Image (tube, rainbow, N blue to C red; front, side):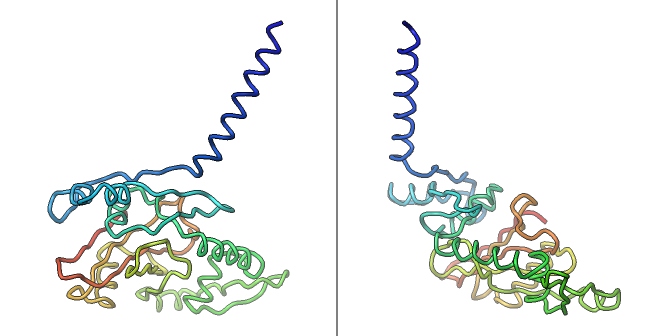
Length: 236
């Protein structure tokens, strides 16, 4: 006589859980607040309204087809916080860019031996051959050719950028050698003079890298707004 009651209770619980999941929507993530390196106060403390504080401390993200997407763009302060706290997993694309990114990955899988080959051919400009399936593959560099490219770098816009507020450009700095933080600063400041621009930069950990075979840093740049510029590094 006890079993039907148990079954009914379990069914009722599952119905409630499913209904609650549909009501609450995607998982809610909160950014970890750190001290701002400029004045010792956090962005949360500098926010003047409850609405601003809520926008800085949380964003709704979810996975679609293996790509993390977000419901709103990250502010410059949030980007700084994610980098300072090491929460680089909180960077995400908007739904439209995420869809285009998934399509690109599908095309790369069909047309190239690897994603790394796609970058070597289309960004770094290396010559290519085709394998037995007709997929493109970068021609291996000779020692002389690699030496000639040792000091080269390619600072280019990210074709499928993370979602940021207007005015923030998401770039990627590619190289055939490991770039140090000092290298990245020199490269960025030559392209975006520090008297007119400010920037943040970081290198993703292995588990967040789409392409592991080619060294690259992510760079966020925006024009200054009448105050001292930002320069923030994570990793490297």
